[in-house]
Amino acid sequence: MKRHEAREKAMQTLFQLDSTEMSPEEAMTHIVGEEQDPFYAQLVNGTFDNRSEIDESLRTKLEKWTLDRLPKVERTVLRMAVYELQYMEETPAKVVLNEAIELCKTFGDENSGRFVNGVLSKYND
Image 1 (cartoon, rainbow, N blue to C red):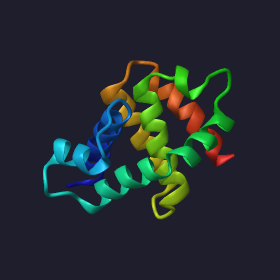
Image 2: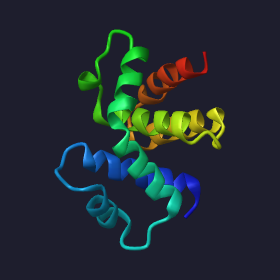
Image 3: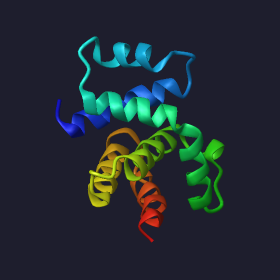
Image 4: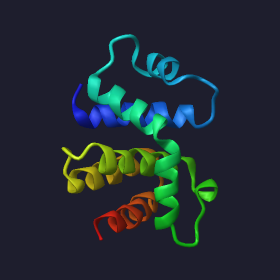
């Protein structure tokens, strides 16, 4: 599985986890089956396991927004991207931002990418 595809599948899995009582393992099996790419599994498990720290970090970057008010797509993309930025330092920040914007184009609306880019760009300050 290529990294872009792994991010798309991770986005779908984390989106599902945001509104169900499934475990990460159940959600991953539902999305990709038994064969799981290590990068995909790391994104899902890492984002899920570190969600409270990630959310706290995001709260400091959101202006005039709360996490609860964010559309679910943007919230999920932001959480996953912040996980990559803060916990997977081998991935260049520019790649993380570009991938997050692409995920917004695929799963969000026409304003999603700009919003997510604006929030994530604050991590480079």
